[in-house]
Length: 311
Ligand SMILES: [Zn+2]
Image (cartoon, rainbow, N blue to C red):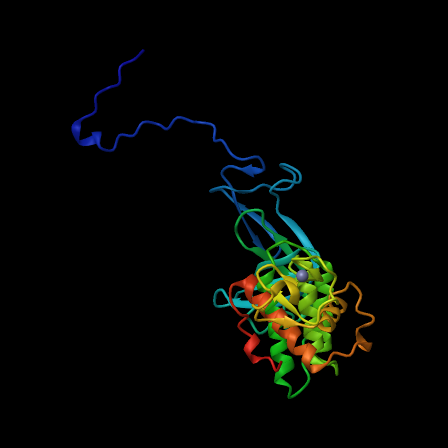
C-alpha cells in the first residue's frame, strides 16, 4: 500500500488516473482497434475502430470477399463529385448496391459500362458490415439500345429496371429472373411485340418472387378453371373465384378461362411455345388488369414508370 500524494489544487483538474487495460469483447470475426479502407482493390488498415476481419481471422464469417458476377445496372445515384452508388441486379447474388468510385469521371475506371440497363461483368468487394459494397470492375457486355424513335421501348426498359429494383430483396438471387430480364431487354431492341415481351417478364418476376396469381381452380369451390364462363380475380389473395361462387357481387377484375390459359402459358418455365401463342386484344386487356393490380398490391403503389408505357 502506498498513499497517493495530494496534488496542489491548481493541478487537480488535469489529473487523470491511468486507464485500466480491460480486454475488449468483440464479436467473432471482428478485430478490435482497426479500420480498413479499400483503395484500388487493396485493403488498407488504419488503427481506429472496429471493422470486419480478414478472411484469415475467422474463415467464412463476416469477411470481406471479392465477388464476380454478370449484372444489369438498374439504378444510379450521385454520391460525391466523382462517385456514384449503382444498384446492380446480378445473376449470382441478386440485387446489390455498390459504391463506384470515379464513376462520374469522363475517363474513370468504368468508362461507359455503368449506363442504365447495360449488362456487364462486374467485380465487387462484398462488405460484411452495413456499409456499401465496393464496385472495382465493370466490363460492358451489352448496351441497352431501344429501337430508334420508340419511346415506348425506352420506358419499357425503365419499367423493367424499376420492377427488378422494387420487387427484389438485397442478396436474394434468381438466376432465371436475371436471364429473363436480359432476354426482355434484348426483345425491346428487336421487332418483338412490346406488350407480350413485358407480360412475359412481369409474370416470370411474379413467379420467381412467389407472387404469381393462382389460375388453376376456383379458390372457393375448387372446380378447375373452364367450368365457368367468367372468373373474378381476388387481388389480395392472387386467386380466381368462379361465377357461381361470387354470385351477384362480381369482383372488379374479371377474366375468361381463355385469359387464364394464356396467363398460365406466359408464366410457364419454358417460353419456347410463346411465339405461336395468339393473344386477343380482350385477353391482353384482362391480363394487364390482373398484372397491374397484382404488382400494385405487392408494392402498395403503382410502379412510377407504368403510366409512360403504351399498354
Ligand atoms: Zn367456385
